[in-house]
Image (cartoon, rainbow, N blue to C red):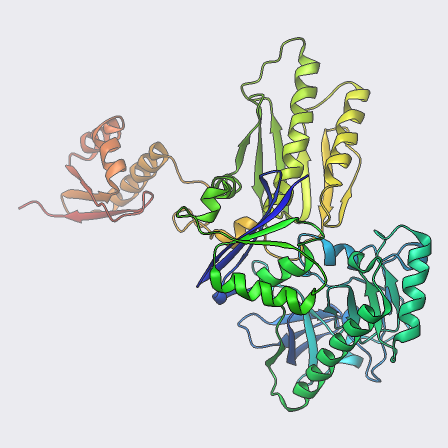
Length: 521
């Protein structure tokens, strides 16, 4: 499978698309005014400690306060309360390494498994006004501020340094047991401190000198952070993570992609220098795009991104899925649409559901949908059809390296699943709530607005002092009141023996109207 990274670099926005055989599967967008802060390290100040929630709010220099759970706080003696990663056998890092190598491009930090050494509450660990060094684990999403942790993590090419724990982890993607033992023994023999490390997939086959150099580089980075922390005020930025382009190069190029194409000569040269410094022994294909057409248009990415913002997605058969995002969860509904099938009803439903599975898995990854996801498949009567759909669902989601958990199909044909949410999804990144409907997604119909005006006129007429009504409305509503809904106005004029004038106001919201009373001269 051909995998390519396409980078559109502009002064005020950088967009990175991961293509598989020419089809965009993941999109990352970064803007200077709203850059993802996940991975950044800040010196913050505790604003409020909430014992009832076992959490605290911190000022790290943004309008929204950051929050930290007790799980993510070092105790006052500097020891780690939660020292173990979520891991499988022999140190396999299931969560941390998966995040480091997923499309999140290290926007996520290794997850911590609770193994409490002290029965300390948040109020015993933090006090209001206290200064504390934290790293952003999740950028702010919607109304939620960024989530931070004191468990610092610094990602390199071959490993991740964790200076607050004494733990060695090996990527579970390195399957050869002999290689796993070699890497662990090698790392233990050359590390000079009790820092923790995760050896990433790229570390497979590397030599002692390469590991030693990366340990030295990451340790110096951590030392510089500590030095800066001593004199920096709170709140302030201590360490800034790599830009989206460099994260793509470090985490996806060579491991996930075979080639990188970039449309900025300056960034092309920066990437070349970055590769020379970080991966001097690896020969990677980096190409400067010089076409007249926009690079995203040339690779047919713009259309795919635009379609990923729509609620309805058509399937090739004629069926479709509808993706609805709410505050608490994302609901996906499957419909047969125009597809009527060729044989029988059960086969039509099965084919639609199976086709929907592939599209749903693709859209979840492309849109970066996270949190709770509910999928409403068309109800299937035959058990082996249900099993077939679930098997394909599980198989389709294996391509997504973000952590997912899929529950069995319910009797109502619902699939409940979760997907790790680290950064904002594509819709939240590129869109904002409709100022017209205030994010409701619906407007009153023209007929409903006309009837609402009718009811208000009846109410107003009871206290009317003048002998004439004037109603100012949106032009579309004015057209209705002069046309199909004219009987409403006529009946009121007859009932009250008073004229009612309708005036269009082009600047009005379609639901906006005002009623005035006046005296005829």
